[in-house]
Length: 322
Ligand code: GLY
Image 1: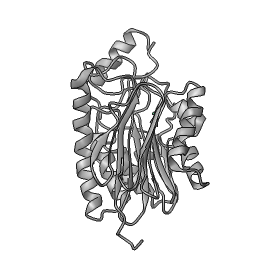
Image 2 (image 1 turned 120 degrees about the vertical axis):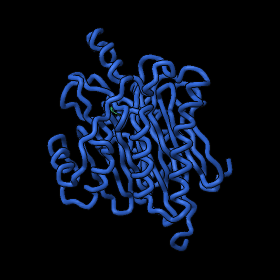
Image 3 (image 1 turned 90 degrees about the vertical axis):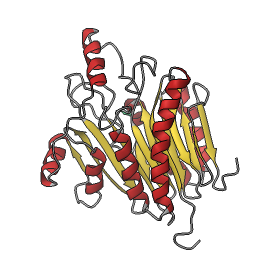
């Protein structure tokens, strides 16, 4: 296939977790996700590189206070916000990211800068130093809802395992998981994955998320995956790399996802993942109640919000014939 002749594909997520409360909740999330898919797929159609498209999608999701990344990130046990983000270019197979970065508006921009650095993963103070070097202004990603959530949890002595997946009390049931992610295949055939998170919420200082590890965000020339859910579970399954490597070794992408999620279910894992392979197949899976994902397959835009509860995997082929 000649360069630039491939039909671009895009899938994004805004977390996975407990069910959204009612139709109004699902509709609000759907609108947020569709706004991102519309803009980012438009970029891909005009020939944008997958990396630029993924960074733009992550920025938009980080800027939406509804999701647990950038503005709207959850607070850790000490009341501070520390965010993690990663970017992986499938063509160069290059991973970069930041772990527990504070006071930055868009952690994905630090990950983007580090793509061209010898030192590609920085943690807390290193990320702060990089911000200073890049002359990025300090930014407070705290929202009133996330602060209220932390104060309530503090009163309850942090007995909840994680903060809510979506920062709107009326839209979600209590427990939840959140993170954002974008996976794109551009018109030149390049796959890129990006993931950004505020973490689990209420966690110990220094706890490291899966999102800035190959377990949570991984890509090569054959496939790209972004994960969301309980980071410890994602790390223990090495989920993103597991699906990508299975695909690389010849397993059909849809089967690589299905098998990895079936295995995860036997170990009571709680997470979701989205991805695309080199043939243009878009896939996703979850063991949690809901996966907040939306995609564009070249033919139309759709989402995963109405999938049944519990273990589910699905895919759309490159021809869009579903
Ligand atoms: N998956 C996000 C986290 O556990 O930090």
